[in-house]
Image: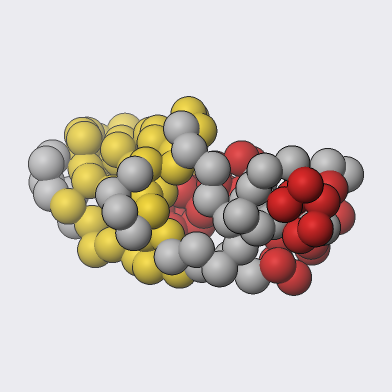
Length: 131
């Protein structure tokens, strides 16, 4: 799990409308496209829209799950590139960009992405961890 260039096992998932509603509530995101399907359709979307910050949260969540219980988040950055909607199949992908000793542990930098079933990236970024 610490060799630069090594791929992390991918993780497939989708977000439910309830999850999007709850994430909007806890993140104080009141935009209706994230919890009101008819409003999202009125705005031209095929369903309730996954929040951009939820993509970032999933980049981190799956990286930490992959790295194990002793991993600590050091930094995350991402760029949203495409819209995803509730129920749409998504896959987290990651690879080790670098692995170096640091702060009494191993500092890992991962390149990570959330991609749609057709391969379109919704979000791409980096997740830096300390093990």
